[in-house]
Length: 309
Image (cartoon, rainbow, N blue to C red; front, side):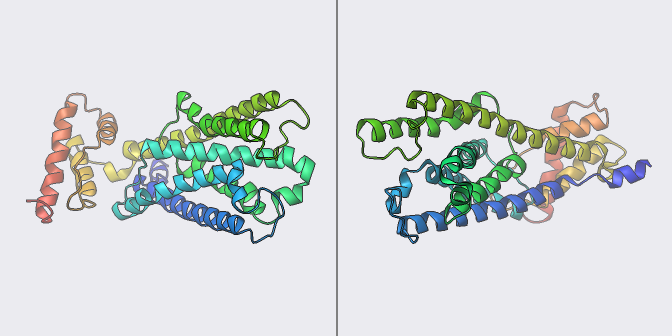
């Protein structure tokens, strides 16, 4: 029974590779859909006779939030491509935060379009016709899936969730100036149609913050799950069954060194070594000695393969 359970333990590299491929595919799709839709709107291929047609699409928060998410997806691409090349997938925290901001924006537009706007303009027109099909349901679904399932490389703190309110707040300020002060824009979001606009503003910010917490919860749930699965691999997998912890660390170094490219920085995966130390109950062998064992074996492989003198 134990052997069967061990065979069911997924290789950590396999997990990261699958996440990398899925994330790369969705990022590419989001970028293409957003670019095509924005260009079509600016070119006004639908011949809409509204102020929001043509370049007017750039005044819509739907367009702005989709573009932010697409920029975040574009920023992911170099790291995802490099992750496939090196068989190692890790995104910087700033990219995860940028994707968080973009995901919250498109999620907010999705909820607003599916409820308030659909109630006045009709569900089919709002969610399914023309460019709305891509910007209201399709892109938000892809981007939400991307952030909550495949861009879960960093734990999102409560404090960082306030970053998601920056685009909404700035847009609300601009909208107020352009609609109620300068009066260059019409109130296309009808913020003053049913209730006074100050109440609308508070409600929008409240909903935006609530949605950001939901996204944060789902993202962190995936982040914790991935960490548990990867930790289990190093704690239980037969791939690391050795007589001594030093042998397991040497094997880890040999595996990692195989993906070294000339010019790469050499780093010691302290988190993984600590997991192996825990697995072998190696409290008698200081961690700094274990780090030295890793580095020594890593450099030996590079020298053997002619990657480093």
